[in-house]
Image (cartoon, rainbow over the protein chains, first blue to last red):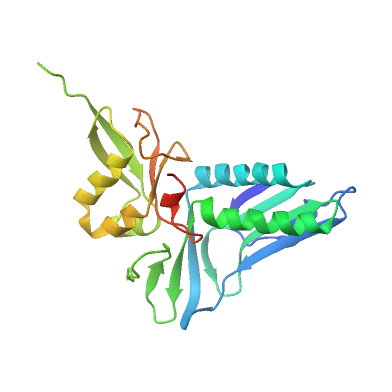
Length: 143
Length: 94
């Protein structure tokens, strides 16, 4: 299952959708909006995607993971829009016959996701300034 | 007499590009045939204030990270992909 959504992520449903009788392990990772980056205080993040490409890249990452580990099912959900501190921005669930593969595959999928999937976030700092996170960039607040 | 062929493409913009330029699509006329990396150079000429970010951005053609020497085709869907949080996209397409 691959999904980009404006709605809160139902992590129970995400986890349930990968469960299988032949899989003795399910790993679910959730990424949430953190309140601090260094000493800067975050109030919220805005997430923006290039949806068709994002879905295509996620599908490729899933196929890639399947070629490396014996995986039952994989679910990937990313939320878009305005998320306040503590809300869930991304969820990855993986099932596998044994736990080691489920842990490794889940981590691999999330790591590749952060490198390849065209989804961006904008920091909404506590002082009212905002800033798109484009790593390697000179940090110039845009408002 | 030489015929000068040209190509007009639309480039999708996201994140800081979309916000700084105030729109989600820009048009660019290029000679035809032309390489993908010429898009970066042309955008840097038109928007010098975005030079550093354009340098670190990938170009996507039809939803795939494009190689710099790839040739642009008439109906291509082109997008400017600034770095995502996992690292610089430019390394991926090259």
